[in-house]
Amino acid sequence: MKIIYTYKKDVYAAYRAAYLHLRLNPSLIPKPINKLKDMNKEVKLYYAGLDEELNEVYIANGGRNITIFNNVIKGVGNIYQEEIKIINFD
Image 1 (cartoon, rainbow, N blue to C red):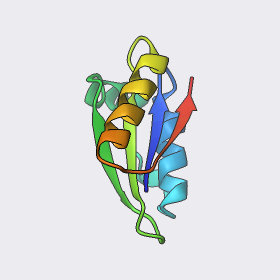
Image 2: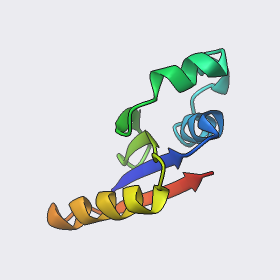
Image 3: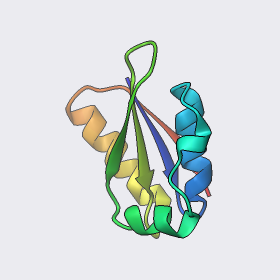
């Protein structure tokens, strides 16, 4: 399964949730937040790591319309028969 933490504005919340999910220290998240936003301007998946159950964890900017992004990701998952769980942070 692939787990994707998406955000529209609150990039820090998505990173923190992914780090906690992976049992990483949240103090390792790049600072300042503006630098984090600049690193993730593009609407694409950023690989964060594998969790204990070997699920791939990603962080993604959902773009202007997060519903469209979610539908595209779920559609691609259906094509490749991958189970995808999307967690949104607005």
